Image 1 (tube, one colour):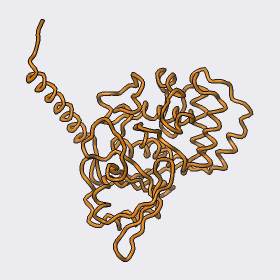
Image 2 (spheres, rainbow, N blue to C red):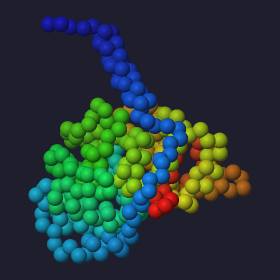
Image 3 (tube, rainbow, N blue to C red):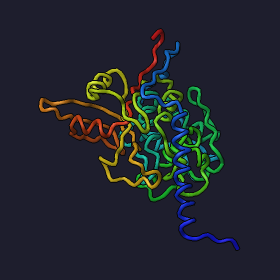
Image 4 (tube, helix red, strand yellow):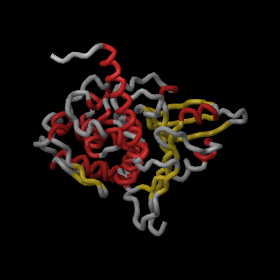
Length: 319
């Protein structure tokens, strides 16, 4: 039997580790993530609706039969979860220890831009096992349909089956370079691993494709935005669209990201307000982890934690 000494095995493990990181770095460099990227104006419009439109659609559903595709999700729980999201989008929560953060932030955009489209998509997915929103067609795998509704020990996500279905479908459909080694949901817990991870370009692409938004992005996964006055840059954009910040949240929270701990950003928050006082301190109000949060930071600390600023704007006819 062929055997290897401990030093040789250690060298092999180290080389594999750096080879994997090298491949990810190469994929990052070719992924099209620029420090500044801007989509060309397209002569179409962003589909918008109101919570009232969405609730009117849901309330017309007298009864929803048990889905043949989602055996672990009772129809009443699905509809109740959808209603909660429409009426209280701030309560969206990605779950404990998952990598669903970006999908929760994207859902915030969906529920504020086109809640009717969200409701129709969710009912379509549940009824037919597939559905379409804007130009994105969702046809989740059988494994995803089996897992949805069974996730446990994720906090409030345990009893929110529609959110489980939605986050799993998003992770199943959209792929980025971080998903290169894990493109399919294979086993329990993959929602906590690279399979569900979202790099910066992937997040912006999801917002553009799913909501037909114009996304102006500054930043990347490894390089902070080259902006001298970051506060002024962000402040000037918050009144003209939705601003999503891509953060290295290890400085804000103690959250365990068990894979790829390289001091890089892993967290997306939706900015609601940002103001600077006479002493230079910056007050930031943002949506995060199912609630509204407030923090005071210095300009230096803001530059330290922000790796990306995504300015999401509705497209208007003849824009």
